[in-house]
Amino acid sequence: MDYDAIIIGSGCGGSAAGAALAGSGFKVLVLERMERVGGRCTTMEKEGFKVDIGSHIVMRSEYGPFEEALKRVDMGGKVKFHHIQKQMIQYQDMKFVMNVPKMMKLFQDLMPTDMLKMAGQMLPMMTGFMKTLSDQFNYISTKEFVERYTDSLAVRDLVNHMGFICTWTPYWETSTGEMINIMLEAMGDMMRAMGDGVMCMGYPIGGLISYPAALCEGIRNKGGEVLTDADVKRVIVEDGKVKGVEMADGTVHKSSIVVSNAGIKETVLELVGREHFDAEYADGIEALRPSWAVYCLRLALDRKVMDIDGAFTVPDPDVEKFDRMVWEEHEVPEDILPPLMITSPSNMDPSLAPEGKQLVVIIGGCSYEPAENWPRWEARALESANSTFPGLKDHIIWKDFLTPATYGALGEWGAPLIGIGQTYDQVGEKRPSSKSPVDGLFYAGCEAGRGVSGIGMELGTLSGIKCADYIVQNVKVGSMTA
Ligand SMILES: Cc1cc2nc3c(=O)[nH]c(=O)nc-3n(C[C@H](O)[C@H](O)[C@H](O)COP(=O)(O)OP(=O)(O)OC[C@H]3O[C@@H](n4cnc5c(N)ncnc54)[C@H](O)[C@@H]3O)c2cc1C
Image (cartoon, rainbow, N blue to C red; front, side, top):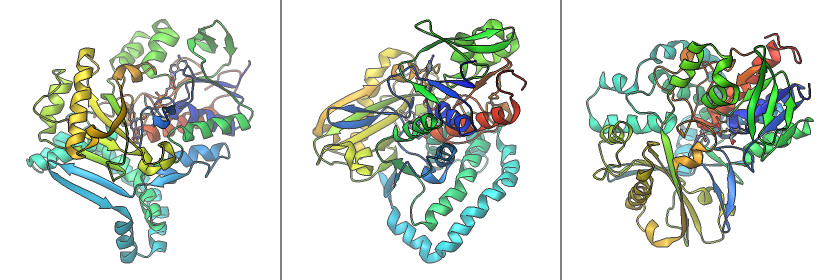
């Protein structure tokens, strides 16, 4: 065999799996079809600005799974974070701005920093126990849960939008247990960050690519290889066992272990082929529902218009009505401004924009079909963001609009923002396992990992680490005996 393990894709899931395997002594080859690593967690240059393709906020920054993955290849501490200083939550015309330094001072006055740090260390020990309780809520939607207690539209709108930001699934499908687990797992990190006087949420200095690039550097330092512009055409399977991969140019790389970060449907139905799975398994994979599709409007501004790091906005009620029109009727609602996630990466890392200029990124959910709606989404997103930050429209040097097709090109069916939806019927024990029925084939990233919870990039990272740890502990390299 050429390699102990081949990883298809260098998104958060693939890079983390590659790092965890390389750190355990595996000879690893990572193959990425794009010209740069990172998948939906990557950054590129455009007319003097450095712009990310997707993600912007890392929920647990260096306190969470990113650092765990980096440590596996001795790169701990290599990715530095800006911690959010000013965050806005908008509901209709009410705008609440959290001034984080002031909030932190208040917390520290109330609780000594040593106590906060100690609580931060102890909480994760209790998380396992608390998870057994919260798992009971896995299969109940947040809508059903909230409606047990209130019929207030404002409460429902905010719970809906917050859940949406974490899992990017519609309210009537978002798993309550998953939402609780995401918070539980983050709580210890939040306390530790408070003990250090910062908010846990952060943005990596240098742009999102800093993280997968550091993992890939670590993989290379451990003797592994990372190839970009390397499109895998198929996974070679003989007699139910993985033998390696064939590239689009016909090159073959041999290994008895292939970890695919390419999306579970693409892997099973296209890269491997239905014929290698029993029909029930293949049908089950085909039936998995993705999280919502996403668009991203990026604005380069000739001056600073937005003076906060990030905003979650709900300019108009009613979010459920809006979501149903988009999700079920495939409409672009004209009477409700879209709820958005708006960030300014250049506020968080000024090196991303030329001096005096600003980069603003506007993210919203839409349905993948029909494509003719996409230009209308661009107009509505700009309208909505401008209603929150008046003046945005008047200072644009350039703008570009990434449609769901951009994200679809990365492999995941339906161009989801996250991956397989964290809905009440697809979380916990119902989430696809990282281990496939084909000997030697595994999945890593936001599309697999039984029992793994988290937000976007951290979910992908945790899935990658968990998958690699399973392989290290259970699989004999060269001859598959899982
Ligand atoms: C606009 C947007 C905003 C977001 N905002 C946030 C945020 O603020 N915070 C957050 O935590 N998450 C956010 N997310 C979600 C997060 O980016 C994703 O959930 C996460 O990055 C997915 O990681 P992954 O490893 O599962 O998949 P991906 O990042 O999609 O990686 C898959 C990789 O596999 C490669 N690949 C596919 N097929 C092949 C093949 N045949 N051969 C070789 N390579 C292949 C792809 O090119 C890609 O690099 C956002 C996503 C988007 C799109």
